Amino acid sequence: MAAIAKKGRREEQGSRPPMTLTEAAALFKEGNDFIFTSHEAPDADGIGAEYALTVVLRAMGKKARAVNADKTPLKYRFIDEHQVLELLDASDLEEKDLSSSTIVLADTNDIQYTGAMADLALSRAGRILVFDHHEAKGVSKDESCSVSDASSTCEMAYYVIKELGQPITPDVASALFAGIVYDTGSFGYAKTGEATFEAALDLVRHGAVPALIHNKLYESSSTCVLRLRKAVLSTLELHERERVAMQIMSKDMLIESGASYEDAEDLINVPLQSKTVEVSVFFKSNSEGVLRCSLRSKGFVNVAQLAQSFGGGGHKTAAGFKCPYPLDTIRKKVLELIRPTLPD
Image (cartoon, rainbow, N blue to C red; front, side, top):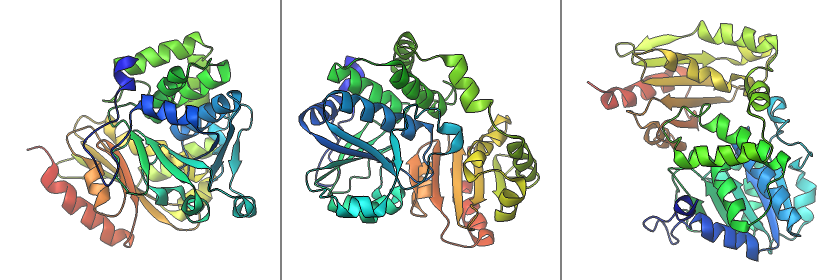
């Protein structure tokens, strides 16, 4: 625990160097008013961290809320056991004086990824803390606790709660365990380390039930998801000697299948099951036709750098961006950038 608690400080970026988990815990201990938020289309890691830290800080007698611009996806609502997470209500936050509030960006390193929260609340906050396991962007206005070699934001949240000396209730344990399982690919991704397993073991001791959480995350989808999977897989293309896989989800596929946009997020991992595929590229439209690109890598290709070329971000093996060009154009540009980064 001591080792990971010291992580987070690196060379100075922008005007402030990232703080350690111990320093983040001190910030939570000293402050009294916190609002947590996560990226658009929040996932299990962001939701789990928001839920756990909000519940723990409330138990410490502090004001704490978790407010997101997007609804909690149906398949992740089990994480929010006591309905702690709120959907952004513009009138509520417009009327609130946020000058004494610390707004915490959980599982995202960029204000703009929080959707409507960025314009409405973050610009008026007294303090902003990036709490994330992606590379810190070093925006000068922000304070950052970024542990880029942590497996997940929930792993970071676990160690902060331990630093705070607070008890971990079964609901908090389950929320954190779900986020860790999700962001490690069931403990299979490269950043899964000793600290990850130590955290997971302790969370099980405090009430997390692995089989139940696995079932909720991976075995509770509707047949709509199967129809969507069939449609998306029919678009699969292989490039560069089968080292790059591309898939497309159109607006029509989404609507006709009856699935939700969030139901598609795991489909990007399917091509990586192939021995030859190094990078998986997934272009996906939501029901309004907004096109985004998700990127996954087995580790040789740094997809975060690729995403940054288009104004996005992430980490070395998982990243994404909102597409600034039409599909045909962006497909060519992405492939052109991937090509020179592939192994010989």
